[in-house]
Image (cartoon, rainbow, N blue to C red; front, top):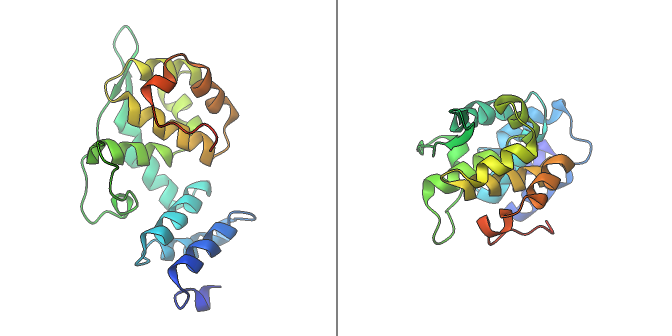
Length: 184
């Protein structure tokens, strides 16, 4: 695949990457990392999606390091504090985000995308609370929507039943995310 990959049309390159999801191994990291530099956004996004699934990949660590400081539990009330990230032009992570939908700010879209590429179970450890507690706290936070949408995407991407259940069970989650597609 590697020898002919660059010569294939972009839609085929993205499809080939999607097919690698099954049987993905650390041996695929170098190839997938090279696909992050592809000229087409759909190929870069497919490569990023696979790289974050590889536990211990350099890319997954970079995403986690960039995302971790954006959410914190603070104060006596143990509230969730959200910090919107600053875009970093030229950063490969920012290049995966694409344009935000109408009505969504660039920083909120970046936050959602970064959160969506981190295993949701990491937040349980980092923030010291179970998914249902973190979802409830997110509902009361400023900038709740990109966090909740990011966690929803992450629960789907990483197949996390505990996070999916927490997101669906919490009253108010659907109101906070009017475009949530629970069928994904």
